[in-house]
Length: 293
Image (cartoon, rainbow, N blue to C red):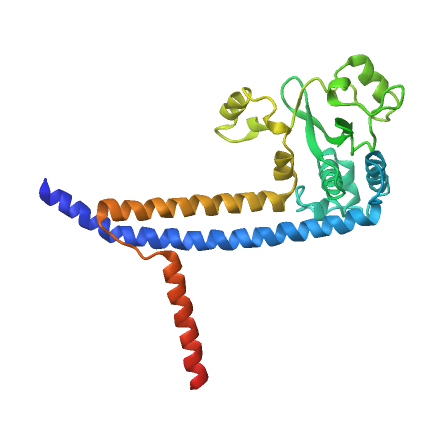
C-alpha cells in the first residue's frame, strides 16, 4: 500500500506542472479574449451612438425618439438584400440591410440597439403560441415609468382609443388588443397575441433548458432585467460577458490548483506575477544586449 501511495504521489507530482502550465496558457488566452471583447463592445457602442445621433434628436421626448427610429426603419437603409451569412445578433449588419428590417427578430434587434444608444431603456418580448413556439418578437420601452409595447416589424406603437401607448398587460385584454391592432395591415390577431409571452427562451437551451425554466418559475421577474436582452441581442456584449466569465473561472481554478499542489503534493509553483516580471526583465535585457551589439 505504501509503495502504491508513493507511486501515485510521484505520478501526480510529474503531471501537476503540466496541468498548471495548461491552465496558465488558457488563462492568458482568456485574458486576451476579454481585452478583445471590450474593444469590440466599445467599437459597437461608438458605431451605434453615431448611428442614433444621425437620426434621433438628442433633446427629443421618449415617444418622439421611438417614432424617429420607426420612421427611419420605414425608409430603410440603402442595401436591400442581406448576405446569406448575416449575423442576426450583430447590429452593424441588421442596421444595414433593408429586408432584415422586415423580419420581426432582426427588426427588433435593430430597434433595441438604437433605442439603447439614445438612452431609452428597451428590452425584447417574445409572443408565444399555446405550444410554446415563438410567433412574433416585439420590444418594450420604458416611458414615464411604464413599459410600453413597440412593434418594430410593423413600425407601430399600439395605442388605445385616446392615443395612449399600451403596455403588455393592457394588451392581454381582448377588447383593447382588437382595437389597437384593427387597422394594421397583414397583422394576424390569432397569432400575435400578448396572453403568453417570454423574454428569454430557457427551454431552447440544450439538456438543462427545461430544468432552468422550471427553477426560474420561482422568480417570475428574473428576466425583466435589461441585461438579458443585451446578452441575447448584441453579440459583442454576449462575447464580453462570456470572456470575463471564462477568465474569472480560470483564475479561481488556478488559485485552487495552486493551493492543492502546495497542500497535498508539496509542489510550489511560482506565482504568475513573478513569472511575468522575470519574463519582462529577460526581454528588456535581451533588447539591451542586442542594442549593445
